[in-house]
Length: 351
Image 1: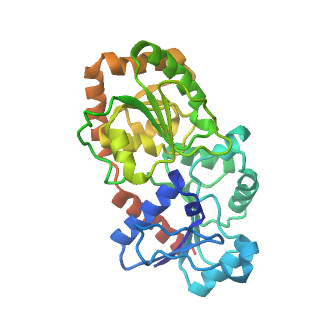
Image 2: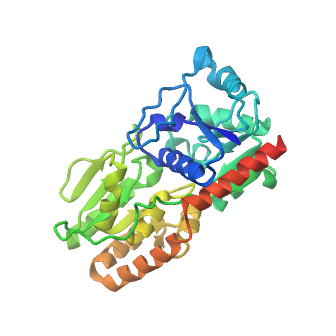
């Protein structure tokens, strides 16, 4: 089987969709070496030193300005691809081969203020679904699968949920005794991550226990900006190679998100042996599986008490670590690749 993958998310250096696409291709090529995979995009995709030489993105040709309408369908026909995976909310407007459309979450339709540049997705994706341009739809959790079926009136058999996994580099490792413990948030700094709430709750914990808060992630242009203050460290975008150590030295990972399609940092933290405090978002609850502390995303008192307990009740931290490791063991990129490949095969069967 020859598969085309929308590489447009790789034009952004960090983020959940970027990591998903890179890890998915690695896992697919490992599990199905007889297949062929090709990145496709109308935009230049910067190469990274850890990519295989085969990971190239051919130039879009003369139809780059009308990529989704003409350029991509012509490319799919010319390369004789069997299926196209639209990895970020879109597939070609004209069907050139069977296609799978990834709906990572429904945040563009939940709250307009969560995305400053999602107007095109809000308009385009529902029409692609209504017109049947996607053979199948792929979500990352059952929670989002159910939401997509209801919102877009999709037939249940057209929508499949395949969970993500954490990279193998995330594993328990000894803490660096030279590094003082800290609370850690990992992810893009954007409106739906609820970070002003987190910082406000953390300030009370800082006054009592002097444990810093590290925010590690790229700030999106519409994301919250924080002034410098004692105990608050803004790391910005962090290289993937540096993330395991960040998780390993954290007292706990804090993730009070308002809405998720999966919540990969929660799984990465659990697989690293870091205790997790997170919200009760349905998709995150599905991932956590009872192995993390969860509280309402608006209950400041509960979050203050939970973070304070990380300092004063080490036995609770040990329980969360053990539970998280057990839960994370149920996820793997091999599983993700095999279940995604089955979706590709079903899309080809449907024609």
